Every structure is written in C-alpha cells, then in structure tokens.
Length: 527
Image (cartoon, rainbow, N blue to C red; front, top):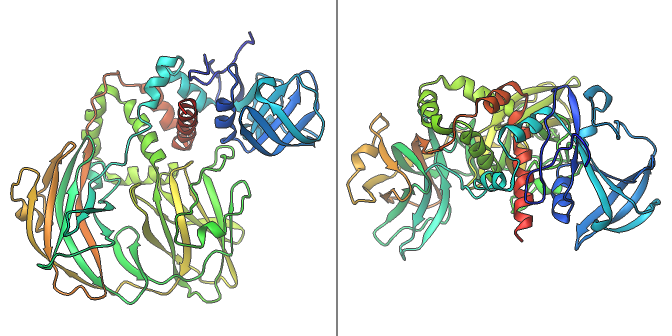
C-alpha cells in the first residue's frame, strides 16, 4: 500500500489523506481504477499522460476517447515534464501547471503513435491537487461510501425562486421562467422583469399567469405587474439587471477562445440550443474564461455588450453544499443575512465568479467594466451592460469569466442599435387568488412592504390581466420581492470548512469542480 495516498471517496474510492500547506501540491493516487473514475477525472484536466511503470519516458495522450473499457487515442512523446512526477508533494513554484495533468501508468510497453489500451491494464492514476479541495474533502467527512450518499443527495436540487407559467384558454400551461432569482435574503430584494413567450389570451381578452413555489423556501412577493411593451427592435432584455431595453443584434464575435484555447466562435453567434457552459478544465487558481474579439467599425463608442444565457444547476448544487455546512445554524445565518448590507454580498459574488464578469483589453491590460448577475437557472435571458469604446478603432478584445460551470452562454453581441425609450403599458389586474382561493389582489397592486407570502412547496398565486391592445406587443411580467431557503439540517455547523471558504481565493470555483466530479462519478456508476 503506497503511503500518503489521496483517494476520491465514492463506492470506487476508499480513503483520503490530508495536505499540510496551501503552498504545496500533493499527489493524489486512485486505488480503485475504472472507466468511471478515469473519465470523470479526465473532464477536469487539460492534459492526460501515459507512462510505463519505472520508465522516465512520458507520452501525451491526444484525441482520446474512453469507452467500452478501452482508451483509444494517439501517443505523442513529451520531451520534458513541467512539474515533478514522482514526488508526493512539492511547492507550487516547481510545478506551476501541475493541476492541469492527469497521469496514467501501465505495465504495458508503449511507443508513440496510435493507441488502444484496456483500462484493466492501467496500474495507477495520479493527479496533483491544492490544499483547498483536499481539506474540503476531509473536512466534509467524505471518506466512506456512506459519505458519498450524503454528498450526492443535493445533485437533483432544482433552481429556487418563484416560478412563472402562463395558463392557456384550453387549460394547458406554458412555463416561462422565474422571478428575482438570486434574491435569497431580504437585503437582496429587487424588482425583476421576465419576458413572456407564446402568451395566449382568452375570448374575454384575459391573460392568466401563475406564480408558484416548487421548493422548500418562503417567498415574499411585493408587487406583480404585467406590461405590454411596444418596440421596433427584434429583442428585449435588461440593462444592468434593472431597466428594460430593446435592441437589435449588432456585431457578432469574430473569434471566441476558451482558457484552454478551444475555439467556440460559432457556438456564440446564434440564438439556439447550442451554448458554452464555462466547463473546460480549469487552469491553476483562475476563474474559467473566454476571450472574444469584435470588429468595432460599425459600432458607436457608447455601446452595449449583450449576452443571452443563464446560470446553471451546478451553481445551485454548489450553493446547497455550502448551505449544508451551516447545519443547525442555517436559519440563524439567514436571519443575519436578511439585515446585512448587500454590497459585500454582491462584491463577493463578483470575486467568486458567481456573477459573469466582463473585462476589456486596454493598452495590453484587462480592465473590468461590469458584470451580469442573478439571471437564474430556469430560462435563458437577454442581459446587457454598457461598454465604452472611446479611443478603440478596429478590433476590440473582451474577456468574460465565471466560476467553473456556473454560466451557460448562448449568444454574445456588441451593439449600439438599442433604445431605453419603450412604450410600456401596465395591464389592468382583474383578480389575484392564492392556492386557498383567498383574494390577494390588494397586496400585489402597489410596491410597498405588504407582501404576499408563499410558504413551502405547493403554494401559488393565480392572476388574471385584461388585454387592451396586443398588437405588436411583448408581454413582460414585473415582480418585486425576495425569498428565504427553508432548511432543517441536523449536523453541527462546520466552521472549519466555512473559514477555509472565506480564506481561499476562488473557493466557490474550486468547490464547483469537486461537485461536478462527484456528480459525474455518481451518475456514471448508476448507469
């Protein structure tokens, strides 16, 4: 048995050993090697190497696939390793890119060229990890099969916040998305706008909207309006997450490259089902990112960078794991956060990559100019932030960065063809009843502190609005409020873990990678 081994804890993996310093990388060795474990780990690493046991010759594994118990690809001789390969631990300065590698070992003879090798012939699998993930695994107690059951229970958690559907005249429903996602404390209460699609009004010229609670949370809803918005542009969205804006698509990216130099230009040029999820293997301690190039010849100096996208379930899953660490003190923490100044929370969301952050390259340096936030994971939205192109001629470079797997990006455009001058007419609210058939109309008519409360799963409010003139109108539901998660964790607060989260740069980014690893291994082992 090799000493100082780290083992990822699943039914396939048996034990974990601690790391001693945040300035070191530790070698992680997997004992129970399988197609599941290798495939899951390889998704998080940029490079795979293959090496004969006892040999100093290292091969890079290129264009590989892992399936049906085989690894198929091509071996290319690697002239030198950029980090120690045979040490249990080493300082980061000696292996700057060590975390980008997954090392496979075999007793089989190797040579450069095409490769087909059974997974059963892989004798060892090693990677190099920093202190936070190591200590997180240990602190969470994920060291047994029972621990695995605990950590994967949150993998199926759905997106929180009030859900919205329109009810058609025939009784069928059309799911539309959610209201004020991310407003998980009273201090984060805000007004939100949700663009509705495929809305059908009845013969009585009524539109029926239902706002409902699908999760264990308490929703506080202040005001709900349905707006009929007329505009000449093709699309409508939110500027700085606050104001409605109508726009036409302007310049599309001429180049879009991920942090591992993968070209995704075509993926971001169309409004379709194809997108980028910021889930390429992470590099070092940086957030995941893409670099975009735009031609500015036909764009004014005061422009908008518009994205169409959404946040992801991985964000929700990572947040749930974080919430669990407050244990029996979770409700106390929520009450404190309800009264906190939101500026620190929002600043932390930017630093941790919970928001999608935008930078422009000026004089060779990246300058932050804004971020996208709180779009939720239920539906794609159009979000815009202003960008100053003064002094820039020809091509401009823009970088978008986020925590691992937290955002799904469908399309990006740089445009100056937009307007804030919209004809938005509120429709008359005819009725509003909750799930108990109680009239709550007066509580939703005005923006005040008179909230309706949707407590726990199954509570809802059904609203009917009078249509006056629906010609060339886009319907937008406006809602103001916030919500609190309801959790009854039995465990004691894990203060050690929470301190490490606070002290570690991009800790949420690193935690998300661990959550995805467990998700991949858990799902694959159950197929």
